[in-house]
Picture: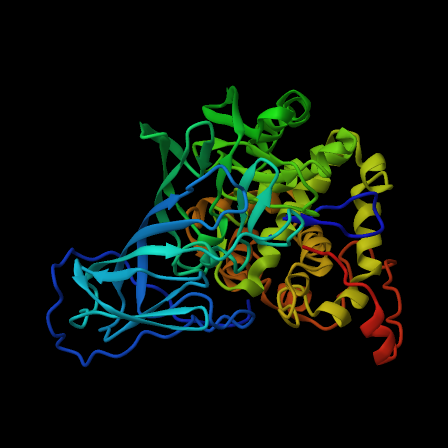
Length: 518
């Protein structure tokens, strides 16, 4: 994710110290669950994420979502309804469990085909099955006739279900996908998806993954997509409206598709053409692209950010009106997220630097290696870029918290802040200085290979970096990631940090405009 960072002509940003319990593996299918040999207890309402404590739910591991969404008319402002069947494995004996859901209503709920009681508590849908669920057993829960949260009134809403002049799209990161559908809405619980969208004839529908079938019936068309790679709920995309899909020549077997408003296709499609070069470039850096297709979804609006929904990154016409020397590194940022953030997801949201620091690293490196860094960032070398970031390090840490421990999540911009973007990339620069370029490049490939399709923590990264480099990097990386001050830069003892200004008076802070840093 990239957002407006103020000083540049435009910097768009796409979207852990806590140790939390893991999720169980697969189990065998079961019919109506019998009483457990262990006393059944409720699953927790949240995974205890430090930044978003109620995101996700305890007691089960989702394997698959079968999601159907219904668009009754050609109206981008309509409230969408749907059904979802979730296949999961219990990780404890469950008397009841929660789903994350902030939508307006629920019709009925069944568990393993049996009617289940349910209630609402804020954005928690609490489900009590007819019989307790046994630990390690597979089960299904179906939520029928739910209605999503009303669509945001305009396209500059920072996240959620967004209306555009041509239709609707989703910007779910970090905690908005459950406004659309009931889910275990945390990146630690990845699952496969089948997504069916039914809309009036004349509208098209695109989602993550591969198109499976299209069925016309009674003035409507139902389009089904299958995402067979594990996906975090925050990465879902459903684009429904008067859009058109353009297929480009594949890159090393990767299908390349772009989705844009039909009326703007001639204007927008040529601008995204560099993505084929970017795919080949990223593969040369970190290995094979982790999914079967990639592309750009461009909407008519001014979101103020770009977003790496899995296999189909989201942009707006505000970005696509800028020079290509600005656009192309940002396209590379979102593409890099397909490895760093999508394929390898964060274990907790404090680990978001792993997503954004890596994406920023490859964004800047692409601009440098294509000779556009001076126009893009106003500096000529990587050293100049990171020297400038280094100077701001202490100021960022005071304002936003350490790189791997954002201070708060009151606003989305508190989490997606400059210290997880440029600060995270600065950590990678320091690491490369410490272990050398060959070992750093080997680490990058090893990280996305070892944790492909999984969620991983900052401590996982530190452990792998130590193993690949042959050095114990625990103290070094903990200082860079969790320290309250910026450590010395290896190889650059002359680099200095700017002083931290005295805190502004409370009234002045309250009056200052919010910084858009997603």
